[in-house]
Amino acid sequence: MHIGKIIEQKFQESGIKLPAFADKINTGERNVYSIFKRKDINASMLKEISAVLEYNFFQLYENELALKEPIEIYKVKERPYNSTIPLSLPFKDIDQLPKFLKEVNETAARYGFTIG
Image 1: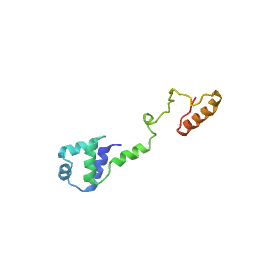
Image 2: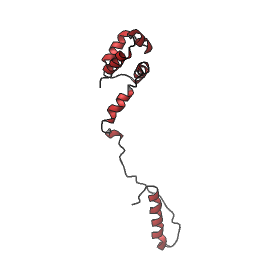
Image 3: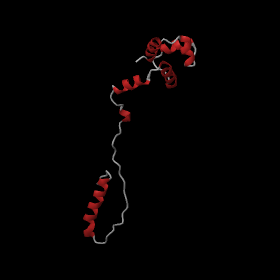
Image 4: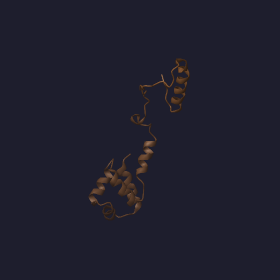
């Protein structure tokens, strides 16, 4: 996508005169022509141009990104979390251990954890 060409097209469609356009985006007329040649532009300038031309140029970037696969860096990767928790058993009879471990596993599962 060549943002400068798109801005130039929308500028021509707007009917705004070059001196008025340059003044509204706080730049000189010569710089307007350099904007038309740019393949990219900073966000604050694009925001001003969008307001003056009454066109949301940011949507062009949204549409372009929506067509592409998600960027790998933003994908969340599952990693196992290992932790050791010291416990004092709440009973004295070792025969109660299986019941206690079952309760611990059920509680962990409710919170999305597995115990291994």
